[in-house]
Length: 54
Image 1 (cartoon, rainbow, N blue to C red):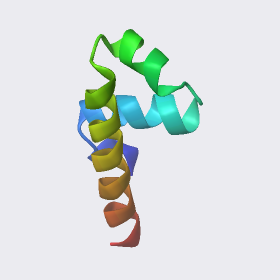
Image 2: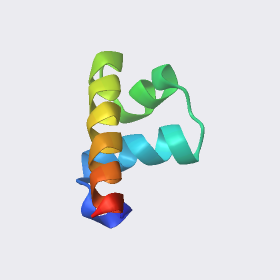
Image 3: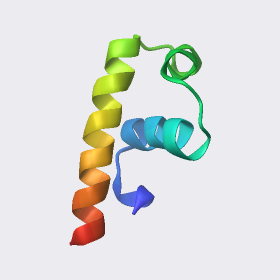
Image 4: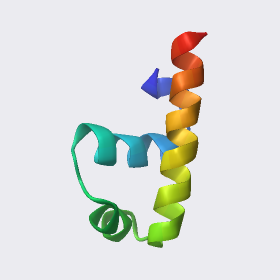
C-alpha cells in the first residue's frame, strides 16, 4: 500500500505513523512548514485508507 503513495505522502506517513516522529520534527527533517506536513499527512492517511479498502 505504501508504494502506491507519492514519495511526498509516503515520507510523511512513515515518519509520523510508523516511526512516531512528531509533526514539528518531521517538518524540520523534510524542510517543510508544519502546516504542509499536516495537510500531507491528512491526504496520505485518506489515500492509504482508500487503497486498503479497495
